[in-house]
Length: 107
Image 1 (cartoon, rainbow, N blue to C red):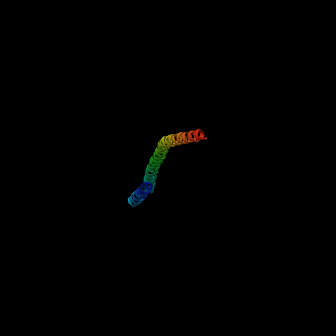
Image 2 (spheres, helix red, strand yellow; image 1 turned 90 degrees about the horizontal axis):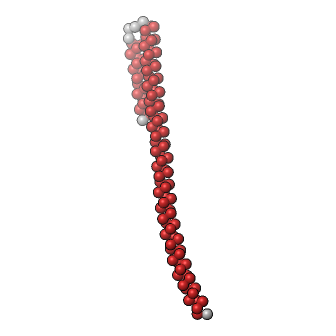
């Protein structure tokens, strides 16, 4: 996107300069035209740069928001998996307790 805008600005600059230089006007008029065209091109370049900067900022913010959302999902899934592991361990402990009781009763 940035490359295309740079090419368009460069093309506009070359076209404007060629048009003004080939026009049969006095030097002062030609200079005024060049100044005017230069200002318009500069303004367009600044606008395009601002637009690209805003797009990049939006993309970065979107990426940050997406990362936060993914981390919440991960934390939630990890919490469920932890709960499953705890439940499994509790069942294993209950089985071990029962086995231990039977060993205590036989002695």
